[in-house]
Image 1 (cartoon, helix red, strand yellow):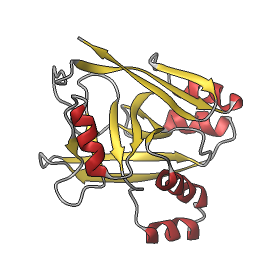
Image 2 (cartoon, rainbow, N blue to C red):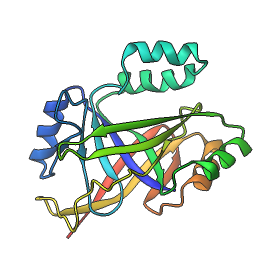
Image 3 (spheres, rainbow, N blue to C red):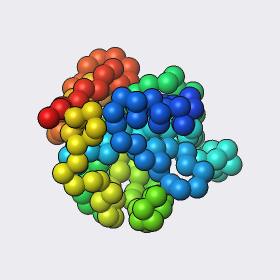
Image 4 (spheres, rainbow, N blue to C red):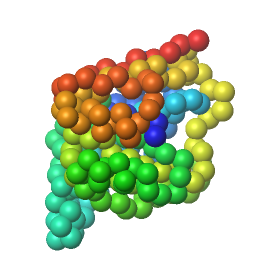
Length: 204
């Protein structure tokens, strides 16, 4: 797996969009109507997702708990309560399933929840993918790559940034080998700690 994207918690989505635009990034909302997120894409490598709230309504939290998926609901509560800034990671594969990743997680004693997701982006592309949420909140969540590629080709942001150069992510010491087995992305720097510590960029 590779790093799919890094999540940035925005106390106010519109303000965060303006902030990153003022930093010289091209930002697009995730959907035309009532967006809950915005995206900063790069032609190569992971992208940035600006997220103002957990992408599920309260009743879904209740349903998850009724289905015995309280750990998944806890992750969304963590997203809701996170401080503004980079805070979460997602890995991606280029398969239609998580067979390899499930084997790794179960071998290491970690259970999970798998679901499907979709959205229509501002260009009217219908994006579809699957998600895997480990019960262990200190592990990144996983996705299959979109059914069609929303990233721009040969794109450089107005500030000269062409891709993310590195992401520093902290977790428990015993989880680092699991993450390394799941993800072989060289831009990912792991340390014993908590959450995303830094994101650096490569410019032309």
